[in-house]
Image (tube, rainbow, N blue to C red; front, side, top):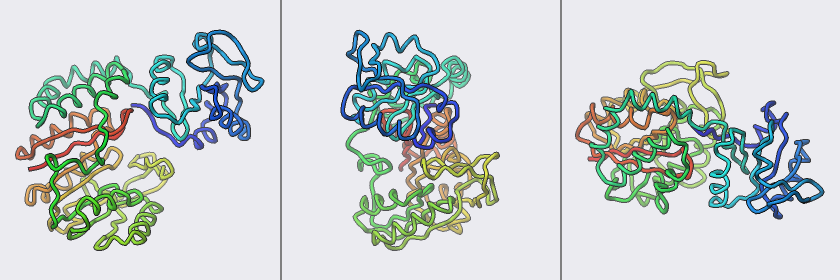
Length: 360
């Protein structure tokens, strides 16, 4: 899976990257500003390149390399200067098979592209399940999205992702033909992070709902989420400083709050409390459960069995944190709760932010 990092942490903490020579992709004001910034951090910038240079030249007193020369180099990393997402993706398509780290402002792409040989074997072993998922999805867009995401795992072809990118709709709050809000919603925000999703929920229901439960085990972000929601004037919110899971226990936790990617990890440096959604609600009702909990979605669903069986809430479940969540989570929900209609939507031009929706 493509790995996402806050770039400043990589530059400061990743010794492998610091030992590489950086080439800035771009010949622009943005490239010059980036050059100054990186030099101030003692990063070893050795030159520039772009899509148009066809012979060696100079830019800011450093070599301006043709791309063909870059392809011959070793121990380098490319830093893309443009902030234009369309151009960034086009550049990534040119260099995705070079097997080197590629940085963008705020984000590092790689070296975590899928191991296509490994994924081919995994998908073949799961072929029957994958074919069943195609049959149970409720609309053609879901089937196309699912099919492209499976194919991406064995090709690393960014074009497949661009074909299914969902533009113009809010993640977790799709059009009414998928999820239709009521004025009596009880919303469980699993993985509340900084509280923004709960704010978006309140807008989605136009401020008319019964209650919001924000579940965020990270100490810093739980505090931030609570303060943010209070500042925004959102009422009837309870912040739960525990993670949703299959049991109420204490687990090791890897704290990466600065990159929005904290998660349960047996080697994590801190500990968190977890709780089942059933216990958190004291077997009371929920009408909408959202989960974006960094790979713990399936255990959290297991811990919400009573709630789902008795109240049949709408579901919005992230299915991208683990490479086989894409098919294992829809399969689990369909087998366990066959009354749900299932939809899949994808919200970025990379591999993150794929959401499974379940509705009655």
